[in-house]
Image 1: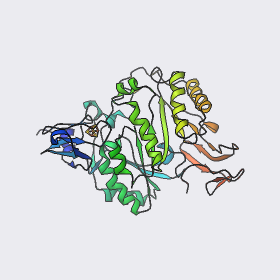
Image 2: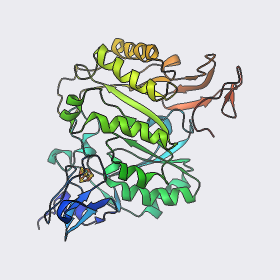
Image 3: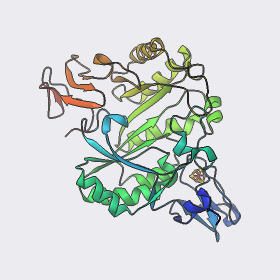
Image 4: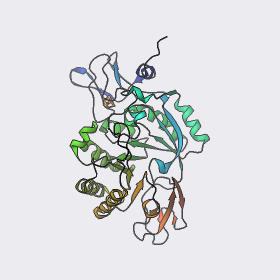
Length: 352
Ligand code: SF4
């Protein structure tokens, strides 16, 4: 008996998309991400390959997960969003980018790479939220693959999560459309946005563009969402002083108190050279450049460091407010009611 392909399997769970409009000549256009693919013909697929035209309607992925687990919120990474809490994390398959160094390509490129070999598990939003509740998760996170491309599914889960008092977040590449941000607005509390580099030509190499990502960071902030950003520093791709300087100046222009996570890279996916890890010195230099740009909360990730690179310290007096070790966070006696008790400064974030 022939086994159906992964794509056929996923299509069985697809539902009519909310994030779609009629474009020129009444052709359907997907608005779930910044690509805004026109899916004119029957069977046409977007760049993500997950959304497609069926009988003149755009269909969106729904009703399955490729991964679901309770993770520390620090792992997302979100350091100023209910630190120390558990985030019920779920992901599907696929991505609207194709980064050659993707650290999660088994999920993100599952439809483009037969060697990914990823299975899915059909499930309902109710089942996921009852699992999250039974594990006392404070937060629900759409993560692992790019959640923008399956926002209808994420929102169906977030609606239930909110009803149970949980906070909802996205871990995203930020290549969003205004339509998807509008759709998410009532349900989203926070996001970690990847700012992968500061060059439009490099973004195009990954399958996107720089400006929509920068717009997403500003727009989420304008809408009152809690935002942290992450940059995976990849040797030879985005680690020049000039690029890191411009990137950090942009972040500081949004808000110097917005946390920036600087993440170490290891070879993965299409990059075979396993020696090509981010040197510690490069990460420290990125931190220095961020500080020079005025950023107050810079954290290192994917690397064995502690102290000043992972703890949260008051941006005014330097008092330690949260100690971190291996994705666990411990609040110190110097923090209460959103404030540093040593100097009385309000600390930006969402706190228990
Ligand atoms: S989610 Fe993005 S990539 Fe996928 S079809 Fe829609 S606009 Fe295209």
